[in-house]
Amino acid sequence: MVALRYFIDIYRSCLFQIVIVGLVAFCEPGIWTALNNLGAGGNASPQLNNAANALTYGLMSVGCFLAGGVTNKITAKWTLFIGAAFYTPYAAGLYCNNRYGNEWFLLLGAALCGIGASLLWASEAAIAVGYPEEEKRGRYVGIWMGIRQMGPLVGGAISLALNVNTAHVGKVTYTTYLGLVAISSLGAPFALLLSQPQNVIRKNGTKIPYMKKTSFAIEARAIWKQLRNKYMLLLIPVFLAGQFGTTYQGNYLTTYFTVRSRALASFLTAVVGAIANITTGIMLDLKYFRKETRSKAVYIFVLVFVTAAWTWNAVTQTKLSRMADPPAFDLGDGAFFNSSFTVYMFFKFFYEVLQTYIYWLMAEIKGAQQDGDIARTTGILRSWESIGSTIAYAVGATSWSNLNQMILGFSLWGFTIPFTILAVFGNWNNATFENENEETEADNSSLEAQRVVINSDGKD
Image (cartoon, rainbow, N blue to C red; front, side):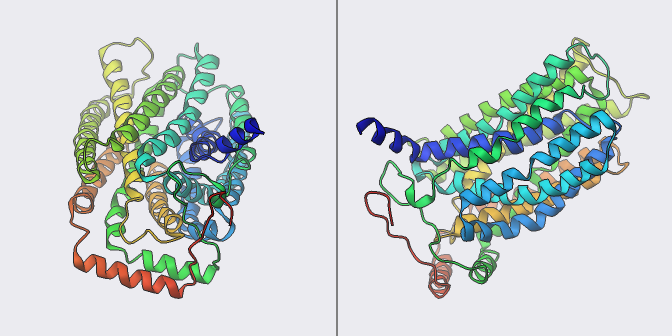
């Protein structure tokens, strides 16, 4: 009985839930990233690949906005399960495109992925941000995103092993995709291992807020209230533009590097990404400084180095664009290859630092601490993230040059800076803001939001 109780305590622990969410993220968005890191497959051009991604993110732009309400209605566990199940057809579509040149299945898979990803993105973020104790949130967000990086790591390892002798640009072998399709099919079963929030046991004895009773009408009104939250509105630009650079980076890699160089890049970016996620999470949880001090210091760090990464990209891309013919960089091609490859790694590292930070910051949204608010705010902000990605992939699907795409991405990053500075450095604890919060809390009571009372055994 003691052993059984010990097993149950582990199974119900907050850390176990984060690991499970990380594994689902590894199997779905992680493998999705690995597939996209490989570049366009089969007879598809980069434009078709970007068009499929634009379709996915276009559906997510609307779907994520609504997914927070769906999460509160059917619980994060079942939202995550349904979302994970819709990812696999996209991986299968890439396989069919690579081997047979089929295009319609790729676009169908992209559409299904858009629906599933809407549900998965909102629910995984709500769990990763909302389940942990406040003092452990940075580490747990880092663990979630670090495990997610194992998708590109495994995908890159498989691709590198199968394409190590492919010293030219073009498509990877179709067998590369088979293992990734198999891994993608495991995401939904992993989601079934999650516990419902009322059954999760936090170390500090606090309870996880969640909606015991809600409806879609209640959720619609509550989402509308969050859309008027000034603090959250200031975070929209960084979520909108934060993903923009990844499309340019994907086109950059596909255009200028051989297959085995791309496979190595996919593998190494997962390693540096996981290091960035976990290190940033630990920094955000340091107890030696006040939370506000940590937040400001990490943002300054992010601001300096992401700007430096874009600047380095700009210099490298300008040199590449001046060449009469685009190079096909392969391993050991000299100093320019080393610089062009390293800037890709540099950007990916600090991009992951940024991602970990903004998800941690999302949980700090003032005026969004009531039951069900985490799911709503993560859904709204990830909807804006999807809008940014939709625009980015739509641009990538055009004949715009890589230089123009780089300029647009760099400009959008600059656009986010004043808004994020206001959110991070602004005094959001003033009397006016507190009064607005009190009005919101009063309104929430009319929305029939019920605080859940959980006894020491973790049951209703």
